[in-house]
Length: 246
Length: 187
Image (spheres, one colour):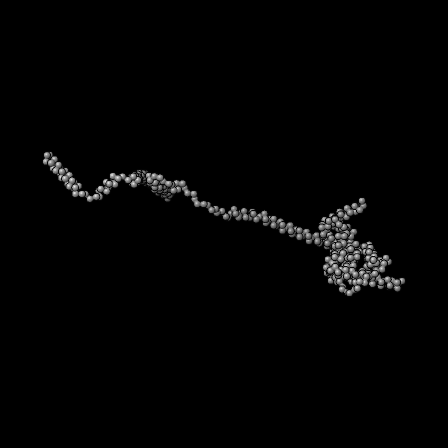
């Protein structure tokens, strides 16, 4: 009990005690706090700068990449195979005539295309010729104007003749093609008719026709041979008799 | 009404100090520094060192003032910080020793009445105690810490804390006896 009383007494006396700190103590503390504040601000500024740089980079990245995309890379797209033209698709053909007609159409188209191409080439060649003329005109400035006019006329005539000749050739070619087509068509029709007959023959078997075809191959009997000799003798006799009467 | 107004003023002062208003911090310091220095002085014999520890304690208080919520006593919060600061200071200075002298634990110390002792004499008696005894005695008898709390703060066992307190009391009894006899002799 006495010890507890002593402790309580000590506590009371010590609680009442107050020691005034030195006069400079607050200044020292204020200085310490100021330094800490400055450090804190510095670190805050650093963090803000880092954040600003990060945000800047974040915003500039897409711009940078966009410009690159615009300049450089064309996008490669995988495309499926070309859709097959309907005309080239395989068609189920019922009749042989149609089959032949379709078979004939292809070369005709090719030929027509070749003719058109050749025409086009000629047409292209023509301006080249006129260019040559223009060049000759330019080149012969020193020669007399009459001489040049004559030359030009001669050349123009030559060109027109050539063009006419080409046109004739083209027309002849086209007519030749038409006749060829007609011939081919006829041949095809014939072939189809033969084929039809054959098919018909195969489909329906005629007994008489069969017999007839077989009988030709069988050797003749004696009776038939005598009859045939009598017939031929009778024919010769009748012919001789008629000749004598005349 | 007066108490409420005072509390309100204190709360405002704390709020301003937490926002780094130097005037408010100075006012808080002026108000609490003498008491806090006295607390530091319990643990540290040298007054200059005690003041240094107190300043460090105030620096931490102002730094962490935002974390203080006006739920408990502000002075109590400050006291705890000062005690911890004093203990860590002693630990750093390697003045943190708990003597293991054998004492008869069953021999209860009888301390005579101290009504005649003044504050300086009490402080002198406490200062004479070894470091370990003194810290445990102040924490237990004056600050009101429990043995479990003392053991946790000082990183010692509860039994060590108890034995240190007992030894402190015993030593104080001897010192009181000595003081009384010398006092009587003088008188």
